[in-house]
Amino acid sequence: MRLSTVEDFGNLLKKNGFVIDRIYEYDRPTVLKDGEQGLVNWMKQFFVSELEMMPEHVQAIAFENVERLTRETLWNGKEWVANYRRLRAIAHI
View 1 (cartoon, helix red, strand yellow):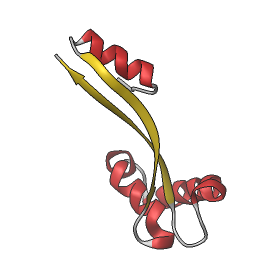
View 2: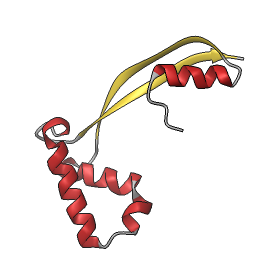
View 3: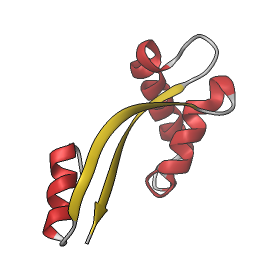
View 4: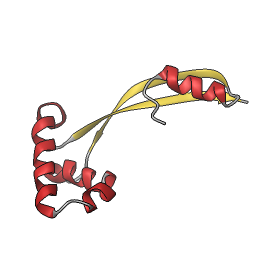
């Protein structure tokens, strides 16, 4: 199940018997290590099983395409910055 909004997260907590004291979301930009190689390394970490099914030349094409499509918004000139969002709740049963 993918939780995409505060409302989704809150509904899941309530469905499982929690009383919500506070729930919120916020931006959490995160610098990816290794400079220019950071985005490729991130993809290799989080998509390992999908990448294992691809020949290396297809992986290289995928990496190039993702970098090209995201460079304008995620590259700051010296490092890649992932635009994570965080959901946080204070709740009790």
